Image (cartoon, rainbow, N blue to C red; front, side, top):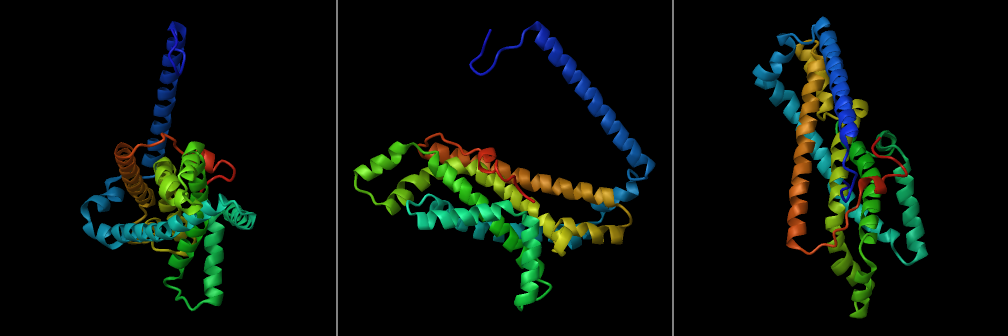
Length: 292
């Protein structure tokens, strides 16, 4: 028996799948048991290591919540700047004029090829040497600069792929009724491409939120990950517990972003007639890889 998308497994394949699943679960259980045993031997599972995160509200109001606020502020600034800049670069890459398309394409490929961490460090050095920006806000400027340069180039590819995913008949029909290039892009192609671009754009938003941690680790930006240092200094050597709580906060934030994007995408697809095209993230970032 064969379905549309795959062959339905027979009795031998089902037994083999059950065996593989059982072996995987046993190995996973052994790995968890080994990890917890090591944690227990190092006294990392004692209540004293985890108790402050549950009983001490000052730990949250002094360190974790301000760090989360700095993370969200940095990511929001980067997104607000990178989104329109990336849209302009993406449209520029589709220009019929080579003097626009080639320079824009060079800029996009250049910033996609450079690690975002390198751009943050470089921007920090430039701000320190050539600008009067104070040292206490310089990490924020440097991190936002690095995130904007890298993510604008990635968003440009997302926009380009989203527009190219539309059927050619959309452009032909618009030309047939006398619309100019700008009108075709603004009134026909971009509104339809937005829905197709949403999954890839949300994926990039999650990358922006996670990459803010690079600024805390290297440049001293007081974002969420950076707060682990003062927490361990003030509440004892509970580094593993602090890393675990911070990781859980990142999971909750990015999970909320993903669910919101799924809800928004469903609303947009239900409200307007879509082409059904979707831009896969792997297609956009296949050549250069993502993040740092």
